[in-house]
Image (cartoon, rainbow, N blue to C red):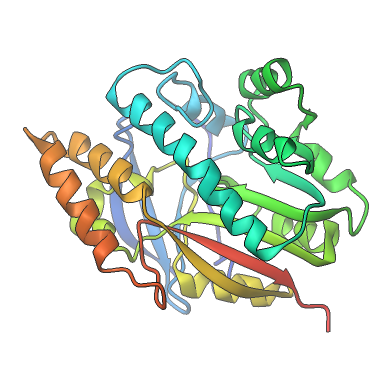
Length: 300
């Protein structure tokens, strides 16, 4: 696959221009191309660089196996994903209901709309943003949801939403700082932003290293540690109020990582690695395969 690529000249977090090669990784999911993850020498932030342009990256999602945007996928991985999605919906809502009252919610990267539909059934006023036409059409036709294109974000009025969610989405956004600036404007002063992100400091990430499925180059443009999220939050006038573990992700990510390794009976090891990854995470210091960050505006 030959695609247009772009080079990031400076770190999106600290603006330092000294970016050094950290890993060479293969896109095991689709293209089998090799991509470079660079690391900022000043703050340590990791990013995929060079990367496909916003226009050319679309083809790296063109697979029914990209199941966050597809409801047609079949097989073990798709079945596990859909089971995890079902369990995660109640888990996500539990976190939301503990931290904020019912209001108006925006889900950016709303996919096939299952999460928004769950919120709607809990009496939330909901709206979605989804660039994938097939996924957004599915959400409209099956759940009668209002789903807009990504360009709509810049058109919202200030203080429009009580809740903004991005479930495994921020790592896909080309203009990271612009997106966070947009969120600054459209979240209400007492509102809440939820970011769910892969955690490259988890046990399973360190176990699988270059085969860790959640690096997912080139679709994942950034690879956020807790320190990175704290730095970006401060830069854009947010406070990271809480961090929650996402324990189910370790099982799915480990299973996919074993598939990339090509190991026989890898599902047994994947299960054990995921268990250990979750065991090594505590409520006081969550460090699971993925983490949920609760951000609040800091407009003092």
